[in-house]
Length: 485
Image 1 (cartoon, rainbow, N blue to C red):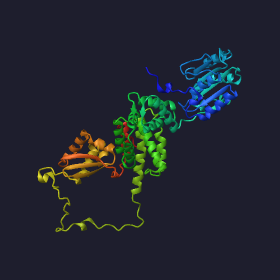
Image 2: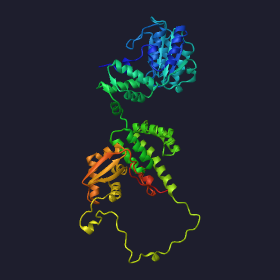
Image 3: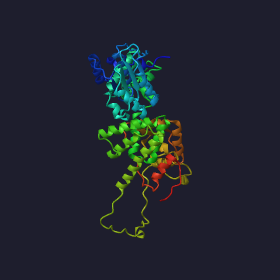
Image 4: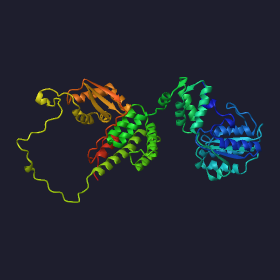
């Protein structure tokens, strides 16, 4: 079994540590001057080098060579998550008075020290107050706010920062070169971005991406990470701005059916909305976007991320729909309108004829002709309305297209290739043709294309029914009896 890259390329000296120069330089100067503290506290996010630097420091102060695979009797590592009780700390306190076996200092590295119990902290505090001269404590934690102030005040604290993306990319490129891997620059940038400031996580992602290939492209990394296509995120925002709650649920379902996780959708949607807010291109009110960004952060840690995402987005869609209806609702007129003439005075004259249809295609009904009428684009709204009741997901896709006739072919142009790919699916086209046949003769063929120059028509918003919000929520939780207040 091969060694994981993050272990293979773990830093062996302070000079090799990436992105923590403010810590390594201070420690190097302290070692050179002989000003060694009896207790250090390393705080910061995961995977940024806290444990590595603790091990390097333990060896440096004892002038011992450091290899990740070797252990030393005078360098003791304790995982506080597994040894958090007072009994373990009392045992430590009893043994620290024993002199080192061969080194100058006996060094105790306590990882995730915030996991200790209150009683264990009290026992450790007594040890930190009066430690033997040959003992050094190095405490490491990702949650410094959980440490008692009495512990923190008795240590030298070093705050580690997340690894910058530029630093991570340079280090990943160096590792790839050493491993004989060809990794595209944009792929490295995406790996570093999703490493989220953790060098260990970034290296692990590189290891995963290169597990079965020597050339890693941007698309390879996207597939590995399950990243939602940018056009699909834009489509989701478009539906969030203009669509109904039902259409929004259908769009989210389409993403889920294609294998995209709710946590990833929430993260990318949040990033896109944040960029719009910063660039002042957001169509949704800024206050609503700010609240939505806050709610999207709750999706990944939720016990049911899929349902949480739906609820968060539904709140915005329902609010938008309500605001739109309030805006278009006519205000009460200040002047009393003139009453309309009575209906009987408005009867048409016998000689007046009804307007003839402008379209020259046969539009007589089946009852009149005994056969179906030919397909015509004037039937498209009726087709959409029928789809809305029979295939709501398909309706949500087709309402975003621009239909035109090219001879006997119905050409459906989509702004987003995400929608175009859905309509190229044979099953979806069969559903569309089945609906068309109930209304008129179908076209000879259907062609689905992507045209980014078109703008998808905004959905018209029908008057709100009293139970619109209830219907939307019922789509999530299923039908239920509604009690009137």
